[in-house]
Image 1: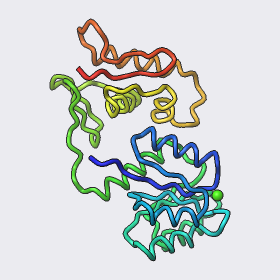
Image 2 (image 1 turned 30 degrees about the horizontal axis):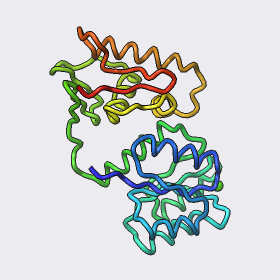
Image 3 (image 1 turned 45 degrees about the vertical axis):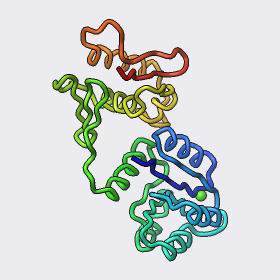
Image 4 (image 1 turned 180 degrees about the vertical axis):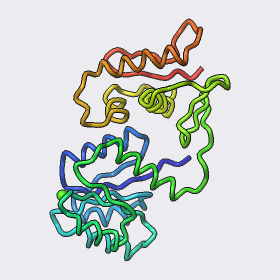
Amino acid sequence: MTTQHILIIEDDERIGSTLLRALVGSGYDARWERTGERGVSAVGEQRPDLILLDLGLPDGDGLDVCRRIHRDDASLDIVMLTARDEELDVVVGLDAGAVDYITKPFRLAELLARIRAQLRRRDPRPAAPEVVGDLRLEAPARRIWRDGAELELRAKEYDLLARLLADAGNVVSRETLMSDVWDENWIGSTKTLDFHIAALRRKIDGDRDASRITTLRGVGYRFEVL
Ligand code: CA
């Protein structure tokens, strides 16, 4: 499967950098531009699968950017990022051709889910079950089986295991796991992460001697491909 390309057009440093990090961490090829002008030329350089567009840009109205992009290619999907008090803009934005909008401040987990939904909508093929060793994951159903028996996973355990499986064989950093599974605004102890890893190990390792989830102390975790 080819990596999906997402273009972020957003002038807010914090939001832009958070989005870029989260999208790259989720396996997307993401690019971040801070002005409408640069955003429009970025579209010309590489056609994005999805565009996240801020409405209040330093060099003009995001709605104009939306219209300009669609003048060249009306099939490009644009998700607008808008502040809560710009409700009228949402209506106008959807009129201008945006496929969805996210109000700020947003939860990163929700934004990522909306992005996945948009990209899925573009790709009508059902997601094939993913197999890693003796584990089989069906993302649309949020179910994971081991040796044909379904694992009874709590919501966060599923999210965490699915995230590790997505990068099976590679280390996933603690920061990425915290931001992808618990979202960027998580302020609790990262002990929660270790606690959930321990719970997952009990459920997926069975009577194995060594855990399939390797701890890289101070770095993160890696799901071992056996
Ligand atoms: Ca802005």
